[in-house]
Amino acid sequence: MAVENPALYIQASEHPAENFRHLITTVMGGQGGVVKSTDLAVTQRGTPNMSVDVAGGTVVILGTEATHQGAYLCHNRGVTNLPISVGDATFTRYDLVVAQVEDADYSGATNAWKLAVIAGTPAATPLFPTVPDNTVVLATVLVPINESTSIDNADITDIRATSDTDGTTTLRNRGLAPAPGVIVCTSTNRPTTTFTGMEIYEADTGNRRVWSGTIWQWLGGPSQYARVARNSTQNITNVTYESVEMNVVRSLPTGWSHTAGLITVAEAGLYHVSGQVRWFGNATGDRILALFVESSLATDGVRLNDLRTPGLSTDFTQMTQGMVNLPAGGTVSLQAYHSRGSALAVLGTQDYTHLTVARVS
Image 1 (cartoon, rainbow, N blue to C red):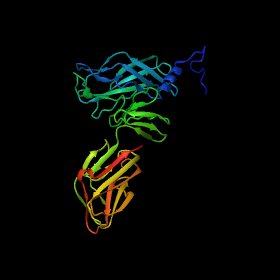
Image 2 (cartoon, rainbow, N blue to C red):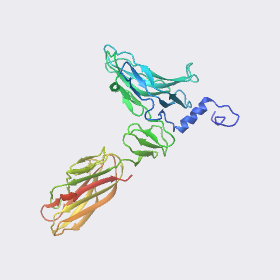
Image 3 (cartoon, one colour):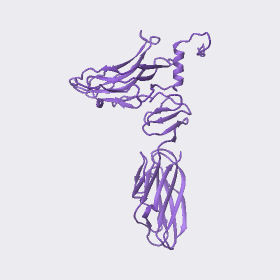
């Protein structure tokens, strides 16, 4: 049957539970997970023992036993304590703390949701136990050898909005289940089921992005502006493009890097780049200032916006700027050239010589 009737909320009609679950799925943008960042957090017992506490809160659990099963809205009213069995005498093991739905319409005879611990198998290299259908994994617990006293927070890995791996299997949730609009996730845990126009907020980076249909396009976030400068004189060889080696970092975003005069950006995007040098006074020949752009340290690049001016008998400042699309790992440096006839200095006093890169989009 292609068309499902009745439509939800049509007058004088009966509606199966699946229809209401489809409503939840739609409101949540097809995402499962906890609703708020504090919901169903797994921690050690107040006085640590062989159990863990699961905080109160709400979780959306996607049904995985049937194509049109939909999503279940489940609420925990207060802290739930779950026991952890003692450690093996020889090997460590992984246990999983989960929120799970059982629905007799699809399998078994139980209609309920629960918070539970799924015990793993002890091994020299322990692996995660199998995750059942209709389940959100809240945390992994590494149970040490011979542990019979306490499980501490150090043993617990929260994966409600992140991920964990045993070296073979990666347990990965989809992030926080969204209210209508922006989905909260992390930079390593973006939604895998997408639609054009879907917006996310990365809790670990503060960046906002929208799914363009092919990539997560950056919308904004913390400042992505780098500025490096030179605070001492550098001699530039005659008739040779030479990189100006900046030796002072004024600003550098997380994930970017700087070596000598080379700024490396973390992500693909459109950038405004500008550079400036202060030339030592000499009227012979020309001065050229260029921004040098390359996709990586291993490839040849291109010079952007070469600016040529004649030399002056007094110290003077030369500046160039432009817009450029850079890939992830793309680099920008500032190159100086002159035809004085012998080496000529650029000056580094008061940040007269500097390079800046700022992300636009």
